[in-house]
Image (tube, rainbow, N blue to C red):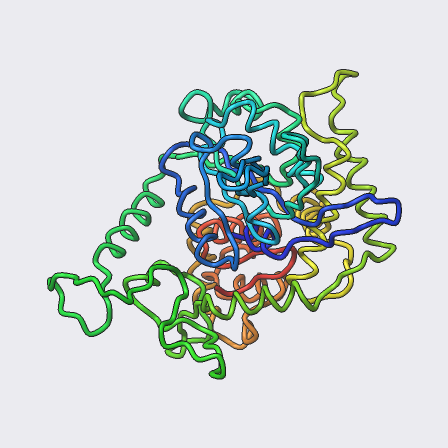
Length: 430
């Protein structure tokens, strides 16, 4: 969902004086096993984006995606009819079953995805049409299911020239995990049991002529009425949401409304124009050079897609992040620094060697549960050092205090189970 948000915000497009056009739209490719909710993400984008065109790889041709030259039956004149990518200008173009597209169709969208234009030279017509849209595509692996023992490019039946035009590539696998399978099945069953407020359970559903299907659609919406910040809690839809605010009996689940998200994205895209600072530009160049250096192993080049387009991808993603923060400055990203700091905390010099035992982990979780609503985490966040000291004080008499390595292992485990969020040296309450 974070990638979809960045795609909706987009980067900053540039039109240089020499005629060069630098796109700001972000392209996303999802490759994964069947039944991993790829099409559901498409449906969410179609229902929330102001302009989105959906198509499939099997049912689309090259001219259907770009433009077709037709002849008027009455006058006999030649004319152009815009395709899906041209019609989706300043919006999103969704292509499902991308791997089933013919080679002619793939070649046709090469220019669309990078130059964001369609050049037509047919039937005596030579012109160029704008196709400035983001492309979100979904594809299935070659072997039906993703083979984790092979490289990504061997699982995807797409040429490197096309893969390099996607800014983000996600591999979605259908892993067998008991807890997650239970959560998915419970969520699907709650969706099937969900009904409109005021209707009797078990009563048949009758369609209405003015019924609207979609996400975040309000039939009684008033342009002058303030937008609701949070959705009204529905136990059938929001039971699996684990992000809460407040403490104790005042703790409640808050889900941002789709209407607010739409207005936020519209405001960020139109009002915020981020620019790179000197530190951010230097850090981007250093990161890109490090990624290129990692390609070389034993003087042999690995099969990867790190090209100059990767540098433009970093720029677009950094600009989209700044828009999400409503910041006019693209500053140095601290996430990598936090990861380095976390590795230093796990080093033998800074942490007790060896993982935490199950008994100590359970004692840590019990003590942390007693402190989670106290004054130590009054602002929903606390530093690791005082938190570990308070947890150690609540251990049974005779037990040694928790070391830095044990505390990091316990917090990482709790963060993996979505009990808390552990980032850098800060613990956030969820």
